[in-house]
Amino acid sequence: MPAGIIEQYIITYGLIPVIIFVILFSILKYSINSKFNVIRDREIANLKNSYEKELESIKHQLQLEHAKLSIVYESQKTSFQHIITAMREAIEAVVQTYDESWVPIDNKYFSNFNKAMYQESLFIEKKVFVP
Image (cartoon, rainbow, N blue to C red):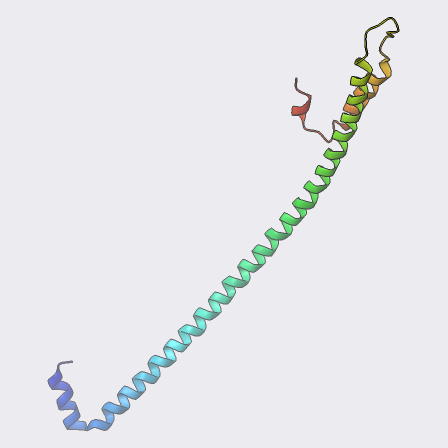
């Protein structure tokens, strides 16, 4: 509004209606802002709750996967220990000093090693068996 119209309004109706209008306008503006703040806070809380639920779900899945991988790791560790033990026995059977008392290598060490490899192959990746 041009300044002249406001001055005319003040002269015609007085200053009190203008003050009342400004006060009511301020109250209305505060009320609208507070409602927007309430709506915004509610939306933020809803988003936060949905993200917390999703995060809990992901956390639970990761804990399950970690437990599963821990079991697999322990099984692989035990399998490798069995294989290494059988391999050590087979190597010790092969390593002999060559002299007159040399005896043929006992096949039981190699059969034990093969048996250990086949039994433990469930817990070991296929790449281990590739030459």
